[in-house]
Image 1: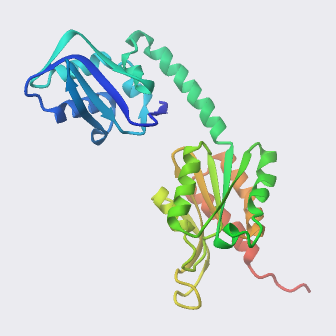
Image 2: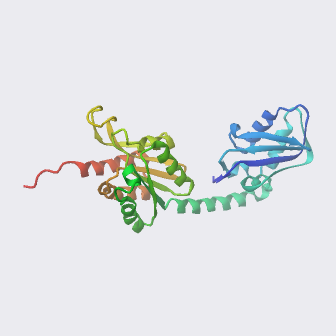
Image 3: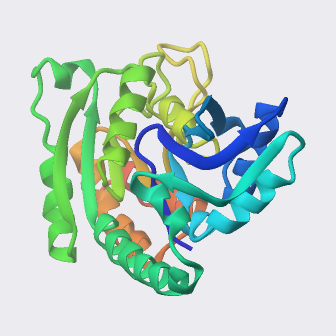
Length: 296
């Protein structure tokens, strides 16, 4: 069933409702339950002139949960003590939640059209790739950022649209903010490069774990904490999911980015789960970094 963006706070107003000592919290909770919304995201904000206004602050909603629900919502509110619903009562909302008032006879056609549209949008979004490099030396311009070009060189022939999304400092808040902005901008894949090591400045994995608490990681190398600059036991790569967006954390060296690209293409094209995806990237990179025996 398609999900749709509510974008910003959305108002629903119910006209033809009279209240006598009614509990506004119960009205909000009833509306939330009827429309498939979280109860903590629906609030009654105004009552006047036989009108009850509710605010919805949930960012996304399942279209089918709200579609053609005017009659059901009015009947549910009418059961609340202290609420009287007139025979000509109506529910209104601008934007996406306007589907509440669609006649039930039209609901199947609207839902089918929305499902088809969502499939098309999702298909397009999943081909859009953004590349973010991390590190103060990249931000300062001390070294060239060659990773976006490397990713584009590999992915464009495979049918992906690749955008260089700039560089960001080794800071969890900045990394997280950049990735979430790219997710909201409709990129189906976000690849970060750098900041996956064992030093205190390496914060990419930690930032992405905030975006996806189930962010899958795989170990490239292990170190004893406290020796040299190592404050973490592992160098890791990772793969996670934020909404529709697959988020992939790679090391910074372009040689390693290049080596990971064939695995990334295969995994994206075939829908691998995150842990297998991460382990496969790590396997390729471990082989790349393993010391080679001298030539005989």
